[in-house]
Length: 399
Image 1 (cartoon, rainbow, N blue to C red):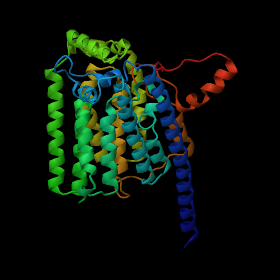
Image 2 (image 1 turned 180 degrees about the horizontal axis):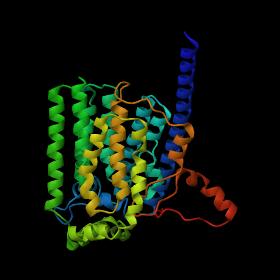
Image 3 (image 1 turned 90 degrees about the vertical axis):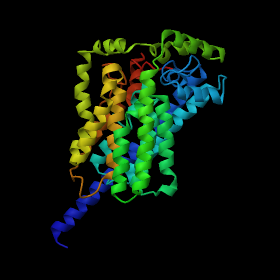
Image 4 (image 1 turned 90 degrees about the horizontal axis):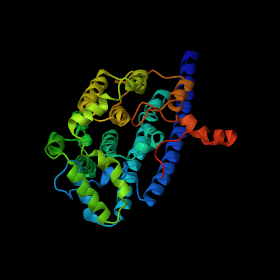
């Protein structure tokens, strides 16, 4: 072996070790953040739940057919007592655990360079929930958990008999019952299932059946949302059913209260966030930096465009722009982790400090133009408060 070849091999080892060290640190941070978020959310449930993070999941059919009410009806079928709060919490944390654990598994199956570290532990992907805790446990977790399971099944080449595809379909159906957002994730699911078929992982028959069930479910979910908007009277009746079940009336003041907004009112509310929301454009561009550094193939850019095209209606009628970016970037990031090949992706690597800065120095707000703490500030907040002696601003979500 020539000196040049030895030098190149040595550099590759250094880069791999560096990526491994960053991966260990990133995995440990995400797991620690998950534990912290679980504790904070459990305290909120213990005190009666959060009007947004809990209330959104409890919308049911007490007033008749309403959009997003099918999953809440399932929850209240399981129990009509305040225990429904803990059942909801179990779904939320369980889904977040699936997304977190399987995404970390996929990272460790990747080349684990600094560029892959940026993609996996991006503030617009795995770090989004703990950096925006007030929006961490919303219903998009259904779709993202389902997609992470699909991504692992593709990466590890699990066959149909493993049951992974059935699990993906079940989570997708439940998510579509809960919120039309899961239905709007359909293009990414179709792409990844078809990619697996083309790679010989699943048969044409299995792929067509999976895509068919998901497509019918997605169309039905969007149709249900359009046909059965909630009225103020519906909201009042649902709220009364909650209090009759022993839940605190304060739960009605969040997602449920906004549930009866008309389409025109929602559009006006979103329009009112501009021009302030233009400040989010640099953050949105920053969220796709890992794709640029990785030199992803053209197919990934097409998927990114199709994914956000499908999510576009949400940007017109709802102000939770951080959630929509989290969903889009998360779906495409998981696709990269599931489908990369040495020939298909570039070999570009970011410097160690660039990768650390990308992960640690910014965050994407869950809703509104005001950004929350970066990972670095989240870590330094307690020492700063101890030195200054005055609590600094905290996220709105408080248990």
